[in-house]
Amino acid sequence: MEREESLLLREDKNGICNLTLNRPKARNALSFELMGLIIAELKTINKNNNLKVVILDAKGPAFCSGHDLKELKSVDDHEFTEKVFQKCSNMMMEIMKLRIPVIAKVHGIATAAGCQLVATCDLAIASNESVFATPGVNIGLFCTTPSVALSRVIPRKKSLEMLLTGENISAETAVKFGLINSIVEKEKLDAEVERLARVITKKPRRVIEIGKKAFYEQLEKPISQSYDYASGIMAKNMLEDDCIEGISAFVEKRKPIWKS
Image (cartoon, rainbow, N blue to C red; front, top):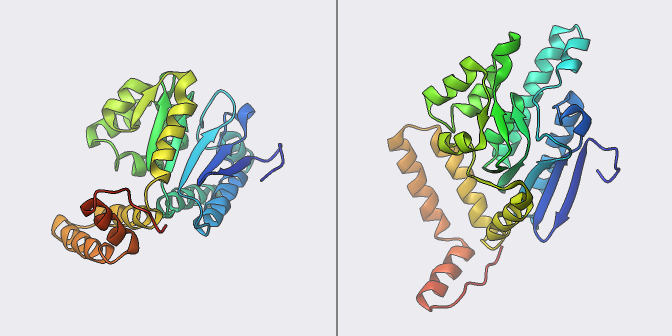
């Protein structure tokens, strides 16, 4: 992933992995190849115990415009089309299954599968100039797979408003909907995302890993089962070295020295 012409760039530093979409002329459209590269990198990252957070950003004026429609149109093959959408779904699942958090650093547009990508990331910070949309309905292709992610992070009626109208929403509206965590001025975006990532790197990695996995698993259960599941996870968490150290440090009024 070191070549300048690569569709995906990667840089690891101080426990933070920066993954950068590198198709600026195509507004970082998710081609079949690019999605494959993202999946491969996420699998590699998941094996690296030295990393604590991933920042997902993009080169050029846009974060991600969604699927590469030119690619889809150029291949008159239903089987290939199915593979493209399945690849995208697999990519989103890899983000959720990643043991460490993923922060979307959003600038410019994030539309269709690009909006889905933002919704799927664990956290998302956007510049005040960002725009979000699921505009598939405008071209006769309803954003059905983006709706899976969208409907799990913002209220039902707001999801359907975006999906049925295809209209753009501003970063301010995206915050109100719950699609993103916060907005900052464009020139402060890098610093704010870096700050958030550094906060996470100071936490015990093993505990973050336990927490992220449990968060997504309990979401899919009925509430009574969620509580039973979460209670068991917390009981096991108590046995972790980092928890033992953290509680001891709290009682002794000192800073903890994490094991992970």
